Length: 273
Image 1 (cartoon, one colour):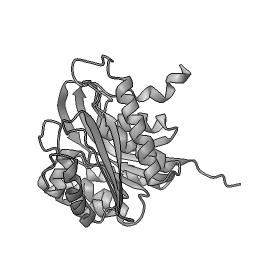
Image 2 (spheres, rainbow, N blue to C red):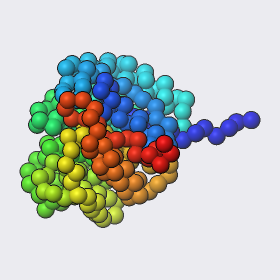
Image 3 (cartoon, helix red, strand yellow):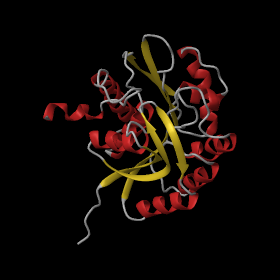
Image 4 (tube, rainbow, N blue to C red):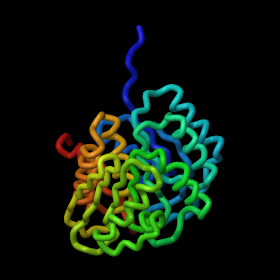
């Protein structure tokens, strides 16, 4: 007798040895939502709360092999893409997306470090925009990434709409601009649904803390997790936004290391401890 397979999500991203971001943050965010998360590792990093010491890319063939292994066997209901460090790796992922093997694709376009330094070269950036974004259900850039894709300088929320037009032109179906890089005391993050022309703001007070490493990874992974559970795009984003901002607040005074620590992914378990 055939049994129904469990609904799972997949994260395609880099490994963070400090476990604050990347694959590790994605898995913790998925588990916080009660979702099983398979992984495709695109790079290894040696890092801690103070910075990155080294990066080693996976080969495109190994990324393809990992992805095929998961997709051939498991009931994948949503996919999150994070760090895709080369044009060749992006080509592998885009090919799978083009053949409809990556449902509910959430792309976190990791392009620019918090310091402002580029994380991928221009060839990879071009491949990401032209080959992968057209297949995305949702793209989740922070301010520097939104500027890099759109060419629009974003100084306030009033610039979001202009940037959104450029993302719409890529063919992606929805956009979530993350406003944490703006310096105001209130964070505004705006979801655009290009299928119906709607937009909605999620607004939160800014928490004063050094522990914000991996917030973007955690948010996009949590969205994918809630899409796996069958929520609508709006509701998945709402649940993920609440999770991340609660986790930032809960972890604001934790001492994980000497630098920028992670958010407190265990917030959903706090009433069970």
